[in-house]
Length: 64
Image 1 (tube, rainbow, N blue to C red):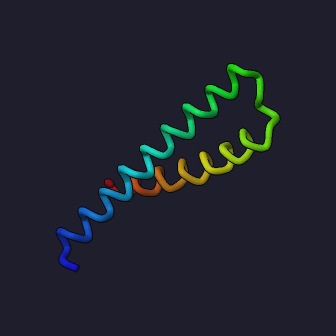
Image 2 (tube, rainbow, N blue to C red):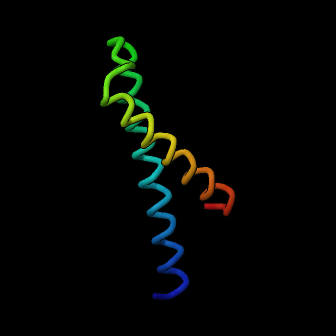
């Protein structure tokens, strides 16, 4: 894998991570409106969002 291919792969990973983070946030907002913040689904989404936010932060720290 060339450096350009590796960079493209990391950029695709960053984009996918941010897209998934946005999707999860939207789903959580929808559950909040329905007053379902104590459901298992909401809690699973919350955990996934924390993980994705950390990944996003690390990618941003490295300029991706």
